[in-house]
Length: 314
Image (cartoon, rainbow, N blue to C red):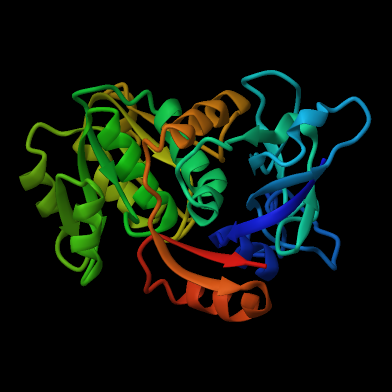
């Protein structure tokens, strides 16, 4: 299926893929893409919203002209619970372009959504990753949720979706971003420049049910003792460092779980597209660039001074 790109969103994956920052299981410091070696040149960009302009043999012709969002994942199997093992813009060419191709199963019709193309483009990786974390962490109404890195694309998505699920949301952010995170739906915001553990104990004296973590590093060791019995610590990033050490007794003595979460399943993405059609999430656009400004856009992303998502339009 051929899609004319209306907007494409940036992700940390774009930076780390270009830098080869993912490592390998046998060599954490090795230059590697998300799932291994990548062939260059490569067109980046996982997150695309646009309009269908042509379909292949056997695809529904009535999709032509429809507004769509692409699921960027390459899955290991067919079925609703398949695992992502590749990514558009990484293992195959992506959306930093005027047009992009996609398998018909990965094209989702969102014509009726009131969200703009730019807002829709923010959803696949950030909100898909957030929803995957929330589903794998089994977040329920009434739970207390901790969100790290709350001002980033995934962080804002976690705050919004967890709040919509009826959870009490405690977010970690800093400086001028704190107010924006609170406006996104966080009940309490912890300043990462202060004593995080002390602030968390004060904000959640009964403990945390689910931690939704894109930072990792020292936060894992500091935060695990704050989980309630049977609590879950879900990790989908390593902004604070990938080397983690913690007291394993806090894990097995309290029936806690540490859960890795890479993106979403097809079932998760279907749920996300339902949210998009009903505009039950309101993505925050931090900045918009033209496609010719891709280098400038990635530089802005790498400075981490923004709240929400950075997008580009052809």
